[in-house]
Structure formats: structure tokens, C-alpha cells
Length: 100
Image 1 (spheres, helix red, strand yellow):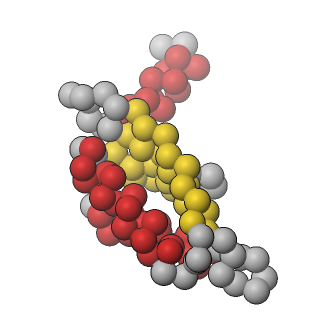
Image 2 (tube, rainbow, N blue to C red):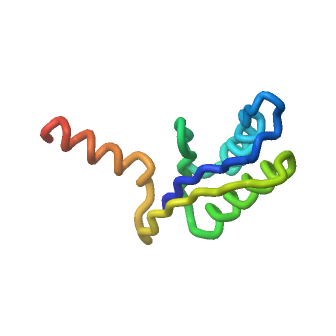
């Protein structure tokens, strides 16, 4: 499965920055060993249901350590039997755009 998720802590910094809290969540994802990527809006992660959801929960938990309130947006593409879709989906679009 592919999961795109975004964790939104309430501000834990007087300047309104949430960078440290979000970095802690991304660190959890990176340490998981699962295929992933982070962009300006979401972190995408690929794996089996239980392992992906466990990573998302740990990421929320580390943010909750520094934030009294945490928002989570999650979108999942559940397609049993398919691996490598984190990159394959984008590659299919790029091939189509090149006219291949």
C-alpha cells in the first residue's frame, strides 16, 4: 500500500514554526526502512498495512510529545500484490508525457 500523510502540530514554538516537530516525524519515517519520500506537503510511504500504519502512529506520537494537539491527513492507495509503486506510478505518467 501507498500512504500519503501530513502531520500538523499546533505550534510548539513562539515564532509559529513547526519545523522541529515535523522533522521528528520525518525522522521516524526514515528510520523505518520503508520506501518513502517527503515533499512540501506530504510524506509518502510504501509497505504492508500494519507496518505503514505503525510508522504513521509513531510519527504522530513523536509530534504529540511536543504539541498539545496534532492533526493528521492520510490518503491510502491499497492495491495488494503491487510493490514499487512509489516510483512506478510517477514513471508511468512521465512515459505518457514523453509519448512512449
